[in-house]
Image 1 (cartoon, rainbow over the protein chains, first blue to last red):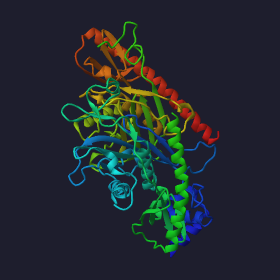
Image 2 (tube, helix red, strand yellow):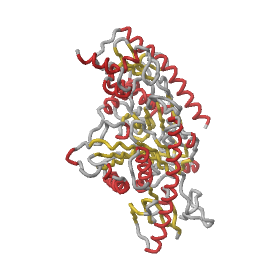
Image 3 (cartoon, one colour):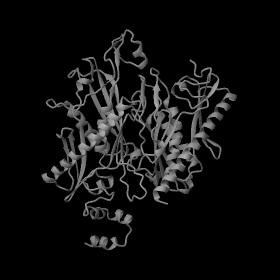
Length: 323
Length: 282
């Protein structure tokens, strides 16, 4: 009708920024036809990722995951904006349930405070927050409880005294900067926090209550009986990594930014574990219908990404241990 | 308990007129119009400013001024014990009000009528009580890569076992400093940089910038917020009792601490501007 022609005529006269805001879809399609995106990334490439373990000193395990980085280059037209997630785990002692007396528990909560994005306001919490909480819980915890397949974390490791005391791990993930594909960054920070987690030393005191021992008490070694000798780490059997892709016509864009997500709405999130097995596949509707080939392409892109993320995580862990 | 040793050293090795280590970064949140991370010792606060933008609630719109709103919240993991209600409880509402009124005094609101400026402050780590002690090396990776602020290793040592401490008082100063930096980063016109610092009085010595242990000792804690160049006080709060003459000394000490923080903030802002200029290629 009139509109496509109008944009064609105006595009030669208009400034780039104005065109980007007025005709976003055409702006992106111009780039996609050259197999590149406005932030100069090729279609299948995710943004640079960094992980820092131990970001929160007061927590038992914590990690800061940043996907995308603020690069200081002299002339860059559009910087790929970063997503930053801060995850921290706090351990508390609780009594285990009757059905599973020698298993602990994990509670995952995802928060989007108003600092992360202009759309989140104090009276109006983000819609994405509870959705992501549930998605993360399903990936990490349901992964754990499945009977045949050993999930990431064996809940039995979280037990202290069978039937009487077990650990409750509260994992809180705070989004500090929101820019598209939040699930990837959130999962990465959650997994990194679990890798960093060190279970505190506890002992039983006279009343039979579990008391968390401080450094000074450990040295005294009084009549209290130690339940576990020293701080230990959780053993993680497999580590899940994810990649979110956007489908638009015949293009597949990996790791979208918020702008791309708002224009092209069909998302596919694939979660693979470090051994290459599929953990979860999430395609919540959307206007683009995907053939199996498209899904397979997404999975292939995720596979590459898993290798990258595995390396980054291993580096972060080994540099932590050197300290 | 002796808070100041005979040689004049405090529990963490500082002198009575010495502040804890300061660290600031600008632009940590790319989505925000202005943002900053501010650390004073073990307290780490992130502030983001959105504005001036359209007023959300038309009925609150002011025709000749900007509306300033502030929200303070603590992360669940910020203190030793997990915080159950991170915002909406009385302390958070009180401190939100305090920060808002302090910043309102220094923002030139008459230049931006019918608009809204939102200041969000999130406490990531508070120098607070933990049920167990942890000697841990806190992460030295800054939120943005800035050559100035990398590699700041810190040893966080907190002794466990104390309860009922009011960590909110100590986050107050860090929050105001972070908010000032974020507002400057957002380019919002201000009369002056509002900075804040606290001081106390223990063992007959005025002490600058109390840490957690000194604060829970039960002595007085004076928090001062000033506009340094104009030499005006915007915030003054104290709990416990102090004789008037000693109060003047303690307040003077806190004011000097504020001025030192203002100098530091100014340096950070100048450095940031140089970086921006370099990136523009001029």
